[in-house]
Amino acid sequence: MVEQLVRLGLLGCGDHTPLTALDSLTEAQFYAFLCRSVRNKAIDRLRKRRFQVNTAAELEMPDEESENDPLNEAVESVWGTIPFASPESMVVQVAAQKHLRYLLKHCILGLRGAPNQLQAVVQELKEYGADDLLQVILAELPDSLVLEKHAHVSQHKDHAHKKLRSCLQQQSSNLTVIVALRLTQYKAVAGTRISVELQTLVQKDLSLEKVRQGLAELVRQGLVDWYGEDAVQLTIDQLKRLTRFYQDEE
Image 1 (cartoon, rainbow, N blue to C red):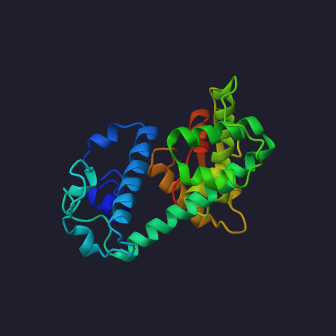
Image 2: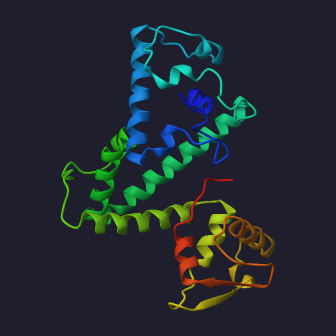
Image 3: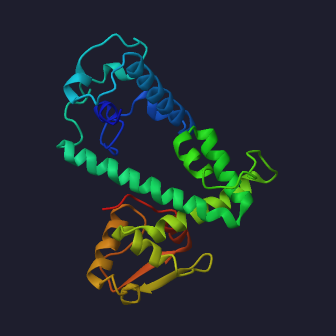
């Protein structure tokens, strides 16, 4: 399934491929589509008693699966080159996603001290169709957790999301995320800008050179304004965006 999604240009392409009909789906709709596709593929394989792992060549061979399956036409990327230069690079990407899933599980379980927030996130996973992750999380929760909506669920969800973002940032080893997290430790008064000396961002595992590298990447992504000075100027809006910033491990 990973190989087929890569060939469709839906995985590992970033923003470098043209938009498709799937780009207009909501997150919940896309998760539902993905789960249905995986289940259908698995059921078809089991019905044919093809228990062994298929090679890339076998996946490209036409078979008698349903003509309505959108992944059947994914033999060759519509836009030519496969996003990954080698199978190894694809494995690295998949491993990174598994690591992110592990971190997300860790952070969600960290909400156990706030039952309403935890319940809001569990309900959200259920709505998204993220069944595998949901089952792993429920296996480590008490049976007393009831999956039903409560009043002010949106507020609980917002608070939970803030905690999850902060947890993911704190667990990250990505240089840019680390620098962003360090910057969010400073507070600005509404309507004002604050000046943060680069030297104050330095810590045991974060040299001044790395601080500059991280800032340069944040500038490239349009999150801060900085022109190589010894201090960076931040507005309250920029600080808010930094609290929401996260990207995969480098």
